[in-house]
Length: 64
Image 1 (cartoon, one colour):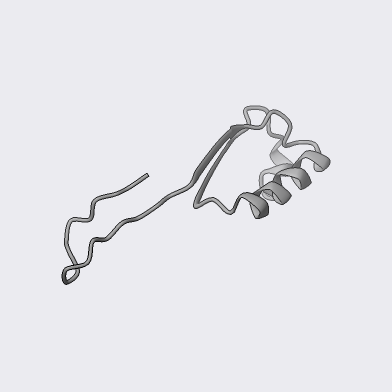
Image 2: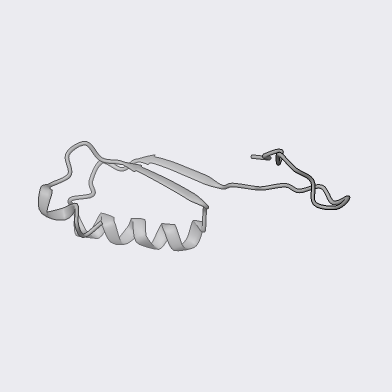
């Protein structure tokens, strides 16, 4: 994604590139799946991650 800045620095064109990942996980309560997600986050190296989990246990929220 290219974002046009509201200003110009000297004569240089400024660009910002954002890599975004959005994923409906379905299974963050499972420790094995959390480990896989952690490894993927390190591998993908995106700028923004959005993970959806509708059935997350209360005691897991602090862990994530």
